[in-house]
Image (cartoon, rainbow, N blue to C red):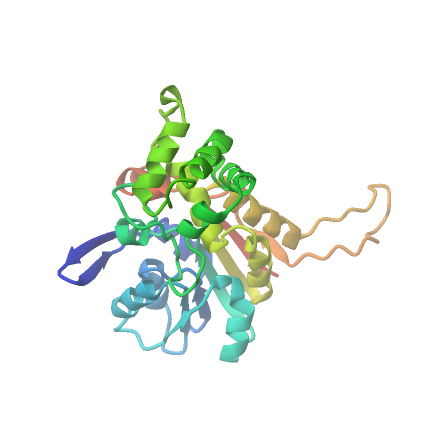
Length: 318
């Protein structure tokens, strides 16, 4: 998804990841109710709502006010869309507030969107010099600046290692804490310089040296991983029979949480093999459609670099 600045207006151009695969995976019923839990600029949503009848309904959820404005503009020709400013982690409460018990399909496209990265003043990008922010919901209080300036060294190291899978996490955390003794870390450029000095030049050959640390801090700011397992289970609970849940992940932590939640929802008998029937009470909520995650085609990966790490998993409620 590209963002072009024209005067004071942002124009969104959409490159939704694995669009065809998601639409096929949702197995859309024209009169059904569908949720795009990560609405963004509505790239996926537009194709979903095109397949709905006037009796069908699309619910678009996003915690980013800018994304909601862009989505409303992109979907202004459709009348059967409801927009919700909230977090998809709250999906059960959202549906309860709307008086909707079950839906026929849910799509989650996780992680940061391209337009959030491109809108530099949001502080998601390690390119340029901008205020350390990284909030997907600008109404929340916790920012990246607060994290790097107030978290204990051990907590910073653990976050950078766990969420960023950065092997130089301890050195980065140590240097962050040393730097902030003399002055506050306010900008992305300051943080990038600290990270670059923390990683040996000979080891800075796998993309930008700040990539993993910025990912880790963004995940901490927006609490992207801790609720994810339960969110997947909640989404499955909210589905009608034969309803589909499609989730796109972009790194191993997300994918692991989604995979484990789907496996647990599928259920597995834990009884000894010599028992004639099941006594453990294992219950299956449905089946996993994707035995292995779907990845983007080579053509898409060449056209859209964001799709290179994307994995799509699909679950069907039974």
